[in-house]
Image (cartoon, rainbow, N blue to C red; front, side, top):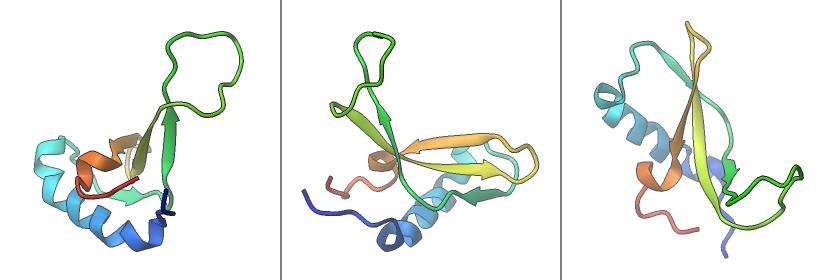
Length: 83
């Protein structure tokens, strides 16, 4: 697997967010969190941390007024990204 660097995709992420802002239902200025988030998926809870396995690569933005954090699947924003 190739390394995917946030800095190389930052502008594409910003462009994708700006293009979708009307449909996202976000009515405040947002700030992009500088980095990727990898949300693990689990079929069951065992009380422990699971390392490895399936995950959803995401980005996050924070609402400047509310402080609310919005998460977006990276593949939904940039369909041609390969990871």
